[in-house]
Each structure stands twice: as C-alpha cells, then as structure tokens.
Image 1: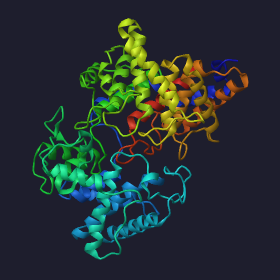
Image 2: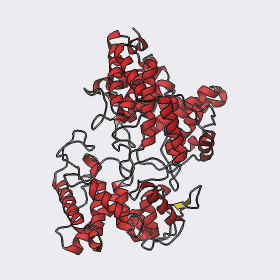
Image 3: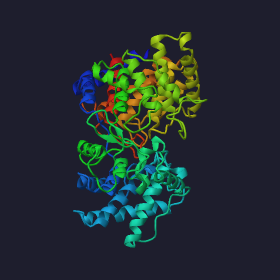
Image 4: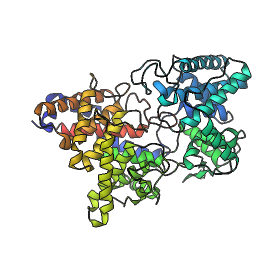
Amino acid sequence: MTLDHLLASGTVRRAHELSTLGGDVGAAAAELVASLSAEPWGQVSVSVYETGRLVSLAPWLTGHAARVEFLLAAQRPDGGWGAPGGYALVPTLSAVEALAAERGRGTSHAPLAVGGSVRRGLAALRRWADAPSGAGESRDGRHGGPYVPYDLRELPDMPAVELIVPDLVARLNDHLAALGEGEPLALPRGMDGAKLTLVRTRLASGAAIPQKMLHALEVAADAATGAPGVVPTLLQEGGDAAVGASPAACAAWLGGSGADSPVRRYLNRAVDHYGGPVPCATPVTAFERGWTLSWLRRAGVPVSVPGELVTGLDAAIGPGGVAAGPGLPPDADTTSVGLYTLALLRVPREPDALWAYETETHFCTWQGEEGASPTVNAHVLDAFGEYLRLVGAGAENARYTAATGKLSAWLRDRQLPEGSWRDRWHVSPYYATACCALALGEYGGAESAPAVRAAVRWLLETQREDGSWGHWAGTAEETAYALQTLLLTASVSSAASSVEEERRVRAVRHGHRRLLAMVTGGGEPLEGPALWHDKDLYYPAAIVRAAVLGALHLARRHGR
C-alpha cells in the first residue's frame, strides 16, 4: 500500500475534517502573506537580553517603565531568565545588571520588586558559578533540570557571547562594589575579557570594526558612544538609521543624551512597534519574507504573492547579497533563501552573489565566520538546485552543477550518526534536519538518498508519545518541520519494507492530529517558544506560522 493510500485512512480523514473546521489553509496563508507588507518591521519576539540593555543604557527612552515591568514578569521561579541550560546565562546577566542599575538610580516605581528580583537573580548566578563543569545536563538543557553551565566550553554557540558575558559581568560587579554586596562574580571558566578589550581599544582609536560586530556594539561601553568608526545605516523609508539592526547597539552609540537624530528616531519606532520591550534585531524584512514565502511555496500552499513583495525581495539582493537587517553584513543565509524564494516564484535570477561566500570546502555565512553552518549550506544548495532546475544544467552553468555536488557531499559528511543534523542558528535539530534533508532529497542526487532515509528513521524514532516532535518539549514549530520532512522526502526515502512505510504513515497521521491540536484555526501556534539563535533566543512568528501552514497543507493534500 502506498503512502498516499495509507494517509487516506479514516483517522487522517478525520484530521482533515478537523483542519477544515479550524479554517482554510489557503485563506490563512493569504492573511499571513498580507501581514508581511502590513508589518515590514517583522513579527519577532522581544528579548530579555536586548530589553535589559535598554533599561541599563537608555532610561531616558520612552517605554522605560514597560521594559522594567517586562523584566520583572519574565523572571523564572529559580531566579533566572530565559530558556533551559546555557541559554539562560546571557539573559539572566542582562536582566540582573539592568535591574541593579535601575535600583541604583533610586527612581523606580517598584523598588521592592526590583530589589527582590536582583537578589534572586544574583543568587541564581552565584549558584551556577559554584557548580562544577558538567555537573548536570547538556549545554542546551535538553534533559531539563536546574543546571546552567558556567563554562565557555559548555555554553551554546551564540553570537558575540565571548564579548557580551565579560561586559555584563564587569558592569554587574561595578554595581556590587558600589553597594557593598558580597564578592564579585567571576567570569565563566575558560572565558576572559581579552577580545572585549581589543574591540574597545580599536573603537576608541577611531578605527572601524568588522560590520558583524556592530550588532553587539553595546559591549564597547563608553567607546561605543559616537564612535567615529561606526556609520549608522539608513533605513529605506522614514529617514531613520540603525546601528547593527540592534536597539541596544543604537542606544550605546547614542550614549546618555538621547538627542534627536535618525538613530534616536529608529529607537523610538522600535519601542513603539513592540510596546516597550524590543527584539535583538529589527527590522528583519528580507529575512522574514524570504523564509516565510519559501516555506509556503515549497509545500505547495496555494497563495498569491503581491508583486511588491517579489520586486522588493529582488531589489534587496545586491552584487554581494543581502543582509538580514540594516547595519548587518550581507550573509549567505538570507541571500540564498531570497534567491531560492524568487526561483520558487518563477522569477529566477542568477545566484552569482553567493560565490562571495564560497570557501574551499563549503559556503560560509559571511567571510571570517568562526565555525560553519549546515543550514546555510543547505539553503545555498536550495538556491543553486532550483536555479538549475529552471534554467537547465548546461555547460554555461557547470560551476553551479559542481557546487551542488560539493555542497551535497559536505552536508552528508556533517550528518550525525543517528541521522540528524545540528546547527549554530537554531536550538532544535528538527529545524536543521528539515533544512538539510529537504535540500539533499531534492537537489542532492541519488547518492544522498541514504542520508535522507537516515534522517527519516531518526524522525520516526524521536516522535513523542503524543505525536509531536520537539527538543525540549513538543512544539508546533518542530512538529511542522518533522511532518514536512516526512512528506516532502517520501519519493526519495520510501522504504522497501511495507512495515517501515506503514510506520512512516502512522507517524504522519499521529503528528498531523497533534499539530491540529497545537494551533489555532489560522495555523498560529498556541505556544511559541523561542528557538532561534541571536544574542538571545527569539521566535519569528511569521516564519513559524508559514512552516505550520505548509505542514497542514501537505498532510491534507496527501490525505485525499
């Protein structure tokens, strides 16, 4: 019996009926696409880390009281902030330092709450610092529990963590010294402030720093204020300007005055848009539009895309690519997803901008990247593969053909023994595995089929009892990635054994029913944990909703 026949069983038909009752996927997708134009600054979650930096650096900025309230409300029962494991360290340091600064000003409208929050946060930090390395769970908190690593080797690979943590620890220790509150907090084991000192010294000299560092300019302290080596980037509309697409970086560059300027106007718009608290990066127009539209189109969701979105995405990609936000460097990830999306929309352009990111072995996110990203390389494979599918693999495109083979081999080599992939831009292996397995299944050739089958086996083995998938807990986002992988790779990874094929179908059926229970009728997850990497974890609501709608559409289509 084939996958489609098995999916058409009574249980899946019932799931299809539930989905129909909950709303039409096409209508929900049309609403989502319309929101991309209506909200060009993006639909991403606010950040404890970034909001804490505004509380500390810019108490003069409108919305200050709302930011303080946000930090107080976000504190966990154990005194920390943020996600499990090592993901808690940066937001906790930021929140404690910010609230300690607020307490020191003596102007808080809730001094008792602020003081109590600082004490609980400090206690958590000291508890984590005193625990020996490897005393509990993995660095990402996979197994739950109270352990937060206080060792550089065990911390998640987050942008600028080696600069952010020394800066926050030093600031917090200044507050402790001023108030006579115990011993200073030590840096995590294996971490020092040498790189931070170099950055500050370079900025103070008037020299420029690498553009990617502007996103965390707030670590530079006084050297950031009006730094002549920093040139804010004008936004396309409104006459505003941003530093590193980061509210915190903008506040640091402005310093204590907050005088009217394009950067100040950017900050005002950011806090107005999000109601006080802010995300780590905004706006993220090209990033959000590329990912959202590509998830919908790849899954075959029937939705019309306005011409203005298509032309805007096309115009954003220059000879060196496109950046995720104003003031960030162009990167291979945003560029490749944008090019892939244009190809899916049948307005392909040659993806030659991506050659700037090619290395001897793979494609880097940007030049000088420390590390490598499987999902970035999967997205480059998508862009090259779809372009070749549309224009043909003739002699004039031999370089692209060779690159698809190189990328496919590199991705296969990065697959873990159990069949999954991990990546530096997302907490969840389900995201990384979806990106890599889908790219290999579609553009990786016959030699990639075993890797795709291994990914499918891993998905089947890690499905939760309730039908969901998830790294920390079952989520709609990760369940959508798993379902899309199982359904879109069926032609590549179908098992020879009917027993194995039935297992896949049961997993899809169970996962589909569970996903329906985890989202609204419009495909919006009822709960949306932050799983995406920036200076802090974030949740891109539009992108996740697109992945969910794509999974629902595929499950319904295969169930007919």
